[in-house]
Length: 163
Image 1 (cartoon, rainbow, N blue to C red):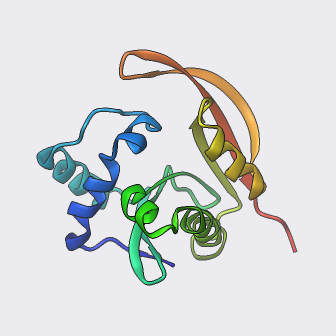
Image 2: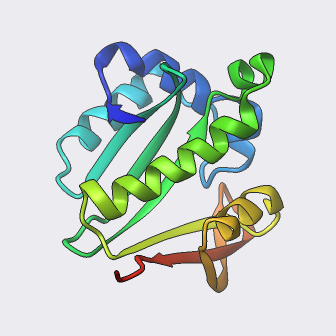
């Protein structure tokens, strides 16, 4: 299930995002401070082309899904999970699959999109496999600066099936 972010979610969101493995798989790898996170949230909340949602796994907040560059037909997206909590409970894989399914359903259902795009570091084979499992195609590759280092990135795309 996806739901809107509440102010009480912000500390958990920042903690999840600052997990070392989440930072290593992100396009900004530095540790995010409280002030930076608050500024990001204020700007994001005011941006009509962005949606940030909380993923709940078995009723508990467990991840974040972000849609950005929203238009009437398409958007890009990204996500991260509460790796520490989900690993401790043994629910990481199930939550990961659930989040991907919920994000796709939200994009093509609630948001009414026809195309969903994303980017993933080329070295992140686990996420690339998960996206392929859900029908995403790898449609391009390029180099991107990530905190001063040139990294290989794969562009992905999923197009809604027509009934």
